[in-house]
Image (tube, rainbow, N blue to C red):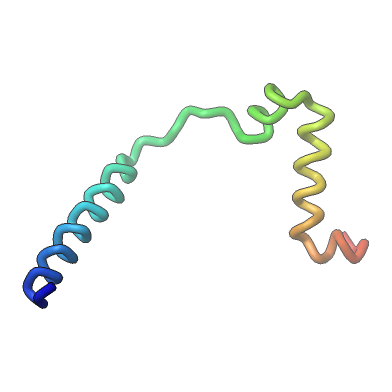
Length: 68
């Protein structure tokens, strides 16, 4: 492919990507319930709490060391 053709493809792709990103930036905040509440509704409170705690412990070095 020639350089001019590649530049046209790149410009078109960049424009499409920029349009997609701008479409997500509507400035309207979602009225969804917090993730913990949604998890509890689907999985049950006990399992959701254990899942969130396990994932939190996994990524918190202080908790893993027993400091926190």
